[in-house]
Image 1 (tube, rainbow, N blue to C red):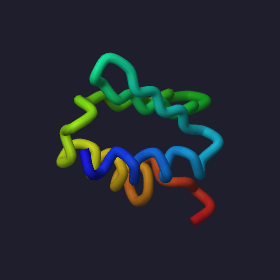
Image 2 (cartoon, rainbow, N blue to C red):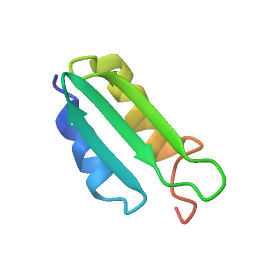
Image 3 (spheres, helix red, strand yellow):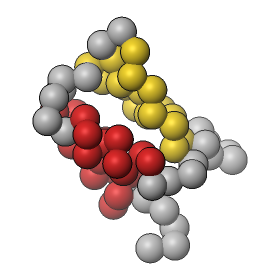
Image 4 (cartoon, rainbow, N blue to C red):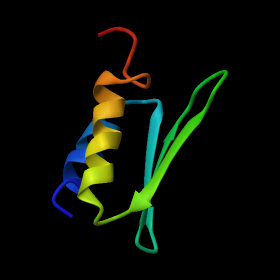
Length: 66
């Protein structure tokens, strides 16, 4: 549960990302012109949330202008 706030901050800083939290699940949606991407996990799964944060910041889903 500690990482969900960090995920919210990462998502809030990007216009192409939507964060939804409902019924104990976290859903991150990326608006991709050719390949939209979605991540799903339980709200308290810190390890998976950390991997989503890493992907959004440094992985294939990182902004191209960095």
